[in-house]
Image (cartoon, rainbow, N blue to C red; front, side, top):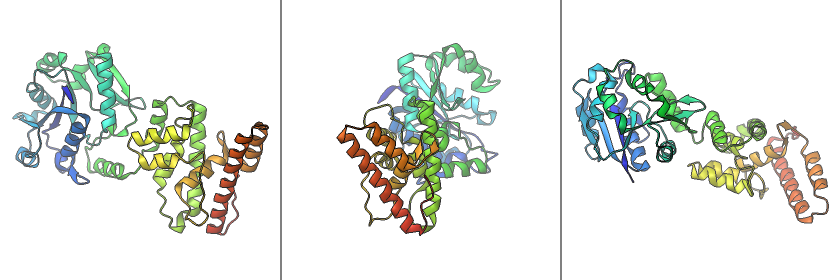
Length: 367
Protein backbone atom coordinates (compact mmCIF):
# COMPACT_ATOMS: atom_id res chain seq x y z
CA UNK A 1 0.00 0.00 0.00
CA UNK A 2 1.14 3.52 -0.83
CA UNK A 3 0.35 5.22 2.46
CA UNK A 4 2.09 8.45 1.45
CA UNK A 5 0.23 8.97 -1.83
CA UNK A 6 -3.26 10.31 -2.60
CA UNK A 7 -5.34 10.77 -5.70
CA UNK A 8 -7.56 13.77 -6.31
CA UNK A 9 -10.28 12.85 -8.81
CA UNK A 10 -12.05 15.90 -10.20
CA UNK A 11 -15.67 15.06 -11.04
CA UNK A 12 -17.45 18.35 -10.39
CA UNK A 13 -17.99 19.87 -13.82
CA UNK A 14 -21.04 20.29 -16.05
CA UNK A 15 -19.77 18.10 -18.93
CA UNK A 16 -21.41 20.63 -21.24
CA UNK A 17 -19.68 19.59 -24.48
CA UNK A 18 -20.40 15.91 -23.83
CA UNK A 19 -24.18 16.42 -23.62
CA UNK A 20 -24.06 13.80 -20.87
CA UNK A 21 -22.47 13.45 -17.42
CA UNK A 22 -18.86 12.29 -17.87
CA UNK A 23 -18.36 10.87 -14.38
CA UNK A 24 -21.16 8.33 -14.79
CA UNK A 25 -20.67 7.36 -18.44
CA UNK A 26 -20.55 3.56 -18.67
CA UNK A 27 -17.40 1.55 -19.33
CA UNK A 28 -17.93 -2.22 -19.40
CA UNK A 29 -19.60 -3.10 -16.09
CA UNK A 30 -18.88 0.17 -14.32
CA UNK A 31 -18.69 3.92 -14.97
CA UNK A 32 -15.80 6.31 -15.63
CA UNK A 33 -15.50 7.40 -11.99
CA UNK A 34 -15.64 3.92 -10.50
CA UNK A 35 -13.20 2.68 -13.14
CA UNK A 36 -10.66 5.25 -11.95
CA UNK A 37 -11.24 4.38 -8.31
CA UNK A 38 -10.66 0.70 -9.07
CA UNK A 39 -7.44 1.51 -10.93
CA UNK A 40 -6.05 3.55 -8.06
CA UNK A 41 -7.08 0.95 -5.50
CA UNK A 42 -5.26 -1.70 -7.55
CA UNK A 43 -2.25 0.64 -7.64
CA UNK A 44 -2.31 0.64 -3.83
CA UNK A 45 -3.50 4.16 -3.09
CA UNK A 46 -5.37 4.44 0.22
CA UNK A 47 -6.23 8.13 0.15
CA UNK A 48 -8.82 8.59 -2.61
CA UNK A 49 -10.56 11.97 -2.81
CA UNK A 50 -13.39 12.73 -5.21
CA UNK A 51 -14.38 16.36 -5.71
CA UNK A 52 -18.04 16.73 -6.69
CA UNK A 53 -20.30 19.61 -7.67
CA UNK A 54 -22.79 19.25 -10.51
CA UNK A 55 -25.16 16.31 -9.88
CA UNK A 56 -23.33 15.52 -6.65
CA UNK A 57 -26.18 13.46 -5.20
CA UNK A 58 -25.99 10.99 -8.07
CA UNK A 59 -22.27 10.53 -7.52
CA UNK A 60 -22.74 10.07 -3.79
CA UNK A 61 -25.30 7.35 -4.47
CA UNK A 62 -22.99 5.54 -6.90
CA UNK A 63 -20.05 5.74 -4.45
CA UNK A 64 -21.95 4.90 -1.27
CA UNK A 65 -20.16 1.56 -0.94
CA UNK A 66 -16.72 2.85 -1.91
CA UNK A 67 -14.05 3.74 0.61
CA UNK A 68 -13.43 7.26 -0.69
CA UNK A 69 -13.58 10.80 0.66
CA UNK A 70 -16.11 12.97 -1.16
CA UNK A 71 -15.57 16.73 -1.13
CA UNK A 72 -18.23 19.13 -2.33
CA UNK A 73 -17.05 22.21 -4.20
CA UNK A 74 -19.79 24.81 -3.93
CA UNK A 75 -17.91 26.93 -6.50
CA UNK A 76 -17.73 24.20 -9.14
CA UNK A 77 -19.20 26.56 -11.71
CA UNK A 78 -15.92 28.54 -11.56
CA UNK A 79 -14.07 25.71 -13.30
CA UNK A 80 -11.72 22.83 -12.60
CA UNK A 81 -9.04 24.80 -10.77
CA UNK A 82 -11.49 25.72 -8.00
CA UNK A 83 -12.17 21.99 -7.54
CA UNK A 84 -8.45 21.23 -7.43
CA UNK A 85 -7.98 23.85 -4.69
CA UNK A 86 -10.99 22.57 -2.76
CA UNK A 87 -9.82 18.98 -2.90
CA UNK A 88 -6.19 19.80 -2.17
CA UNK A 89 -7.15 21.61 1.00
CA UNK A 90 -8.83 18.42 2.25
CA UNK A 91 -5.95 16.00 1.63
CA UNK A 92 -4.55 14.34 4.76
CA UNK A 93 -1.41 15.97 6.16
CA UNK A 94 0.41 12.61 6.17
CA UNK A 95 0.32 12.53 2.36
CA UNK A 96 3.56 13.37 0.52
CA UNK A 97 2.22 13.63 -3.04
CA UNK A 98 -1.00 13.34 -4.99
CA UNK A 99 -2.13 12.37 -8.48
CA UNK A 100 -4.27 15.07 -10.09
CA UNK A 101 -6.81 13.00 -12.01
CA UNK A 102 -9.57 14.50 -14.17
CA UNK A 103 -12.52 12.12 -14.39
CA UNK A 104 -12.62 12.52 -18.16
CA UNK A 105 -9.35 10.60 -18.61
CA UNK A 106 -10.70 7.29 -17.27
CA UNK A 107 -8.70 4.50 -18.92
CA UNK A 108 -5.19 5.05 -17.56
CA UNK A 109 -3.43 1.80 -16.71
CA UNK A 110 -2.04 0.76 -13.38
CA UNK A 111 1.38 0.23 -14.96
CA UNK A 112 1.57 3.92 -15.84
CA UNK A 113 0.83 4.85 -12.25
CA UNK A 114 3.49 2.39 -11.09
CA UNK A 115 6.04 4.09 -13.37
CA UNK A 116 5.18 7.53 -12.00
CA UNK A 117 5.32 6.38 -8.39
CA UNK A 118 8.64 4.57 -8.86
CA UNK A 119 10.13 7.66 -10.52
CA UNK A 120 8.86 9.86 -7.69
CA UNK A 121 10.34 7.62 -5.01
CA UNK A 122 13.62 7.31 -6.90
CA UNK A 123 14.15 10.90 -8.07
CA UNK A 124 12.11 12.89 -5.53
CA UNK A 125 11.14 15.46 -8.13
CA UNK A 126 8.27 17.82 -7.38
CA UNK A 127 6.12 17.06 -10.43
CA UNK A 128 6.14 13.77 -12.35
CA UNK A 129 4.41 13.73 -15.75
CA UNK A 130 3.52 10.69 -17.84
CA UNK A 131 4.56 11.06 -21.47
CA UNK A 132 3.49 8.92 -24.41
CA UNK A 133 5.77 9.08 -27.46
CA UNK A 134 6.89 12.54 -26.42
CA UNK A 135 3.46 13.94 -25.54
CA UNK A 136 2.73 14.95 -21.95
CA UNK A 137 -0.44 13.46 -20.46
CA UNK A 138 -2.38 12.87 -17.24
CA UNK A 139 -2.25 12.37 -14.35
CA UNK A 140 0.72 14.33 -13.00
CA UNK A 141 2.02 13.22 -9.60
CA UNK A 142 2.58 16.39 -7.57
CA UNK A 143 4.54 16.74 -4.34
CA UNK A 144 2.63 18.33 -1.46
CA UNK A 145 5.43 20.86 -1.01
CA UNK A 146 3.64 22.85 -3.70
CA UNK A 147 0.32 22.77 -1.87
CA UNK A 148 0.42 26.39 -0.70
CA UNK A 149 1.44 27.78 -4.09
CA UNK A 150 -1.50 26.00 -5.69
CA UNK A 151 -3.94 27.14 -3.00
CA UNK A 152 -2.76 30.75 -3.23
CA UNK A 153 -2.96 30.93 -7.03
CA UNK A 154 -5.70 33.02 -8.62
CA UNK A 155 -6.28 30.20 -11.08
CA UNK A 156 -5.49 32.14 -14.24
CA UNK A 157 -4.18 29.61 -16.73
CA UNK A 158 -5.25 26.73 -14.50
CA UNK A 159 -3.00 24.20 -12.80
CA UNK A 160 -0.80 23.98 -15.90
CA UNK A 161 0.20 27.62 -15.47
CA UNK A 162 0.97 27.11 -11.77
CA UNK A 163 3.13 24.06 -12.43
CA UNK A 164 5.16 25.85 -15.11
CA UNK A 165 6.91 27.73 -12.28
CA UNK A 166 8.26 24.38 -11.03
CA UNK A 167 9.53 23.00 -14.35
CA UNK A 168 13.11 22.73 -13.05
CA UNK A 169 11.74 20.37 -10.42
CA UNK A 170 9.73 18.31 -12.92
CA UNK A 171 10.37 14.97 -14.57
CA UNK A 172 8.83 13.38 -17.65
CA UNK A 173 8.37 9.61 -17.42
CA UNK A 174 7.82 7.56 -20.57
CA UNK A 175 4.87 5.17 -20.46
CA UNK A 176 3.40 2.88 -23.13
CA UNK A 177 -0.16 3.84 -22.33
CA UNK A 178 -1.93 5.90 -24.99
CA UNK A 179 -4.84 6.42 -22.58
CA UNK A 180 -2.86 9.08 -20.67
CA UNK A 181 -3.62 11.33 -23.65
CA UNK A 182 -7.23 10.23 -24.23
CA UNK A 183 -9.84 12.49 -22.67
CA UNK A 184 -13.56 12.63 -23.43
CA UNK A 185 -14.77 16.13 -23.99
CA UNK A 186 -17.23 15.16 -26.73
CA UNK A 187 -19.44 12.18 -27.65
CA UNK A 188 -16.93 11.38 -30.40
CA UNK A 189 -14.14 11.20 -27.81
CA UNK A 190 -16.24 8.86 -25.71
CA UNK A 191 -16.84 6.53 -28.65
CA UNK A 192 -13.09 6.41 -29.33
CA UNK A 193 -12.50 5.44 -25.72
CA UNK A 194 -15.09 2.67 -25.93
CA UNK A 195 -13.39 1.29 -29.03
CA UNK A 196 -10.01 1.54 -27.31
CA UNK A 197 -11.31 -0.27 -24.23
CA UNK A 198 -12.78 -3.06 -26.37
CA UNK A 199 -9.39 -3.88 -27.91
CA UNK A 200 -7.69 -7.10 -26.84
CA UNK A 201 -4.31 -5.67 -27.68
CA UNK A 202 -2.24 -2.48 -27.52
CA UNK A 203 -2.46 -0.03 -30.41
CA UNK A 204 0.30 0.24 -33.00
CA UNK A 205 1.54 3.36 -31.22
CA UNK A 206 1.56 1.57 -27.86
CA UNK A 207 3.54 -1.30 -29.35
CA UNK A 208 6.12 1.20 -30.61
CA UNK A 209 6.22 2.83 -27.16
CA UNK A 210 6.72 -0.60 -25.55
CA UNK A 211 9.69 -1.30 -27.81
CA UNK A 212 11.23 2.08 -27.04
CA UNK A 213 10.53 1.52 -23.33
CA UNK A 214 12.45 -1.78 -23.61
CA UNK A 215 15.34 -0.20 -25.56
CA UNK A 216 14.75 -2.23 -28.72
CA UNK A 217 17.21 -1.08 -31.45
CA UNK A 218 15.87 0.54 -34.60
CA UNK A 219 16.83 -2.36 -36.96
CA UNK A 220 14.84 -4.79 -34.83
CA UNK A 221 11.87 -2.40 -34.78
CA UNK A 222 11.97 -2.25 -38.59
CA UNK A 223 12.08 -6.05 -38.74
CA UNK A 224 9.08 -6.28 -36.40
CA UNK A 225 7.13 -3.82 -38.54
CA UNK A 226 7.91 -5.88 -41.65
CA UNK A 227 6.76 -9.06 -39.89
CA UNK A 228 3.56 -7.32 -38.82
CA UNK A 229 2.89 -6.32 -42.42
CA UNK A 230 3.40 -9.90 -43.59
CA UNK A 231 1.28 -11.30 -40.76
CA UNK A 232 -1.57 -9.00 -41.83
CA UNK A 233 -1.14 -10.11 -45.45
CA UNK A 234 -1.35 -13.76 -44.40
CA UNK A 235 -4.38 -12.99 -42.26
CA UNK A 236 -6.19 -11.42 -45.20
CA UNK A 237 -5.53 -14.58 -47.24
CA UNK A 238 -7.42 -16.73 -44.71
CA UNK A 239 -9.81 -14.18 -43.08
CA UNK A 240 -12.86 -15.38 -45.01
CA UNK A 241 -12.57 -18.93 -43.70
CA UNK A 242 -13.86 -18.12 -40.21
CA UNK A 243 -10.97 -19.43 -38.13
CA UNK A 244 -11.61 -17.01 -35.27
CA UNK A 245 -8.13 -15.51 -35.28
CA UNK A 246 -8.07 -12.12 -33.51
CA UNK A 247 -6.36 -9.73 -35.92
CA UNK A 248 -5.56 -7.14 -33.25
CA UNK A 249 -3.77 -9.78 -31.14
CA UNK A 250 -1.90 -11.09 -34.19
CA UNK A 251 -0.77 -7.62 -35.25
CA UNK A 252 0.44 -6.71 -31.77
CA UNK A 253 2.23 -10.05 -31.38
CA UNK A 254 3.96 -9.52 -34.73
CA UNK A 255 5.07 -6.02 -33.73
CA UNK A 256 6.30 -7.19 -30.33
CA UNK A 257 7.64 -10.66 -31.08
CA UNK A 258 11.27 -9.54 -30.80
CA UNK A 259 10.84 -7.18 -27.85
CA UNK A 260 13.43 -9.26 -25.95
CA UNK A 261 15.56 -10.14 -29.01
CA UNK A 262 18.80 -9.11 -27.32
CA UNK A 263 18.27 -11.60 -24.48
CA UNK A 264 18.82 -15.35 -24.26
CA UNK A 265 15.68 -17.41 -24.99
CA UNK A 266 14.12 -14.20 -26.26
CA UNK A 267 10.81 -15.78 -27.31
CA UNK A 268 10.14 -17.02 -23.79
CA UNK A 269 11.42 -13.83 -22.16
CA UNK A 270 9.35 -11.66 -24.49
CA UNK A 271 6.24 -13.75 -23.90
CA UNK A 272 6.57 -13.49 -20.13
CA UNK A 273 7.20 -9.75 -20.40
CA UNK A 274 3.94 -9.25 -22.33
CA UNK A 275 2.01 -11.43 -19.92
CA UNK A 276 3.36 -9.36 -17.01
CA UNK A 277 2.02 -6.27 -18.79
CA UNK A 278 -1.44 -7.87 -18.82
CA UNK A 279 -1.41 -9.16 -22.41
CA UNK A 280 -1.56 -12.92 -21.93
CA UNK A 281 -3.00 -13.70 -25.38
CA UNK A 282 -0.18 -11.79 -27.07
CA UNK A 283 2.41 -13.46 -24.88
CA UNK A 284 1.04 -16.88 -25.82
CA UNK A 285 1.47 -16.08 -29.53
CA UNK A 286 4.96 -14.63 -29.09
CA UNK A 287 6.10 -17.68 -27.11
CA UNK A 288 6.09 -19.93 -30.21
CA UNK A 289 7.55 -17.61 -32.84
CA UNK A 290 10.92 -19.38 -32.72
CA UNK A 291 9.84 -23.01 -32.29
CA UNK A 292 6.39 -24.42 -32.87
CA UNK A 293 4.65 -27.79 -33.08
CA UNK A 294 2.35 -27.87 -36.12
CA UNK A 295 -0.73 -30.09 -35.98
CA UNK A 296 -1.74 -30.74 -39.58
CA UNK A 297 -5.24 -31.75 -38.49
CA UNK A 298 -5.94 -28.66 -36.34
CA UNK A 299 -7.25 -25.35 -37.71
CA UNK A 300 -4.69 -22.73 -38.64
CA UNK A 301 -4.01 -20.38 -35.70
CA UNK A 302 -2.37 -17.05 -34.86
CA UNK A 303 0.79 -18.72 -33.54
CA UNK A 304 1.35 -20.38 -36.90
CA UNK A 305 0.74 -17.18 -38.85
CA UNK A 306 3.28 -15.28 -36.75
CA UNK A 307 5.83 -18.10 -37.00
CA UNK A 308 5.46 -18.17 -40.79
CA UNK A 309 5.54 -14.37 -41.17
CA UNK A 310 8.77 -14.26 -39.18
CA UNK A 311 10.33 -16.97 -41.34
CA UNK A 312 9.62 -15.29 -44.67
CA UNK A 313 10.98 -11.92 -43.57
CA UNK A 314 14.72 -11.37 -43.39
CA UNK A 315 15.68 -8.14 -41.63
CA UNK A 316 12.91 -5.88 -43.01
CA UNK A 317 12.28 -7.51 -46.39
CA UNK A 318 10.28 -10.50 -47.62
CA UNK A 319 12.65 -13.27 -48.71
CA UNK A 320 12.59 -16.82 -50.00
CA UNK A 321 12.32 -18.94 -46.86
CA UNK A 322 14.17 -21.91 -48.40
CA UNK A 323 17.18 -19.75 -49.25
CA UNK A 324 17.05 -18.26 -45.77
CA UNK A 325 17.11 -21.69 -44.14
CA UNK A 326 19.81 -22.91 -46.55
CA UNK A 327 21.98 -19.99 -45.50
CA UNK A 328 21.31 -20.70 -41.82
CA UNK A 329 22.21 -24.38 -42.21
CA UNK A 330 25.44 -23.52 -43.98
CA UNK A 331 26.35 -21.04 -41.24
CA UNK A 332 25.98 -23.82 -38.65
CA UNK A 333 28.00 -26.47 -40.47
CA UNK A 334 29.52 -28.86 -37.96
CA UNK A 335 27.02 -27.96 -35.23
CA UNK A 336 24.59 -30.86 -35.42
CA UNK A 337 22.28 -29.60 -32.66
CA UNK A 338 21.90 -26.21 -34.32
CA UNK A 339 21.29 -27.79 -37.73
CA UNK A 340 18.71 -30.11 -36.21
CA UNK A 341 16.82 -27.15 -34.74
CA UNK A 342 16.99 -25.22 -38.02
CA UNK A 343 15.70 -28.22 -39.97
CA UNK A 344 12.84 -28.58 -37.50
CA UNK A 345 11.88 -24.94 -38.07
CA UNK A 346 12.11 -25.39 -41.84
CA UNK A 347 9.76 -28.38 -41.64
CA UNK A 348 7.34 -26.40 -39.46
CA UNK A 349 7.39 -23.57 -42.01
CA UNK A 350 6.57 -25.98 -44.82
CA UNK A 351 3.80 -27.59 -42.76
CA UNK A 352 2.13 -24.22 -42.13
CA UNK A 353 2.39 -23.27 -45.79
CA UNK A 354 0.74 -26.59 -46.69
CA UNK A 355 -2.12 -25.87 -44.27
CA UNK A 356 -2.67 -22.48 -45.94
CA UNK A 357 -2.58 -24.00 -49.43
CA UNK A 358 -5.07 -26.71 -48.49
CA UNK A 359 -7.35 -24.15 -46.84
CA UNK A 360 -7.26 -21.59 -49.67
CA UNK A 361 -6.74 -23.93 -52.64
CA UNK A 362 -3.99 -21.56 -53.78
CA UNK A 363 -0.23 -21.85 -54.17
CA UNK A 364 1.56 -19.98 -51.40
CA UNK A 365 2.79 -16.81 -53.15
CA UNK A 366 5.10 -15.24 -50.53
CA UNK A 367 8.78 -15.87 -50.20
